[in-house]
Length: 198
Image 1 (cartoon, rainbow, N blue to C red):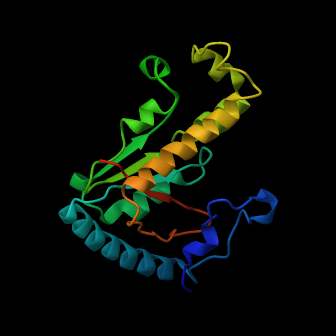
Image 2 (image 1 turned 120 degrees about the vertical axis):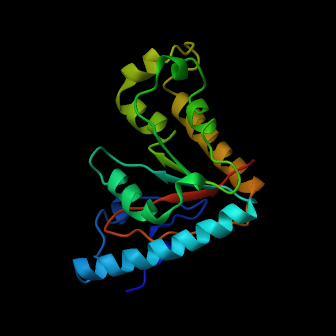
């Protein structure tokens, strides 16, 4: 079975109704042995592509793994990236913000960890936490020390969504020709790839 990234992609401007998207997909592999063979092929191809990516030093690749605890992010990163040369790849795990991180804009801690050209950056969670977890747990928002007008429930979420869209548009516009789709190796896992500015 061929994996099509189109099955996991939402086009810019499309309206998304989450109930229309499956939470579980049909297995891509017939057996564990078939999975191991496919994973080995993908790792070999990914390793070759990484060498070219590193040597060209023209683009950066950012993979964002976003999901709930025990949702498979660590396993996906470990399996998919096992063939990658660590010299050209960095993984950042974003847990609860530190005191220093809380003193900055909500995008600061991820922005300063974006990969340089020729490298692959992997985010285990990201700035999306600031519109997911923080929205569900408003006490986190209160700890961020924001002014009252910035904490306005009527505007804060749309402003944060806009900031995220603007950041991602900026990243893509700076290096818009390069995207590598890495097929998810097992059910329900997906990654997002974006070029980096500098």
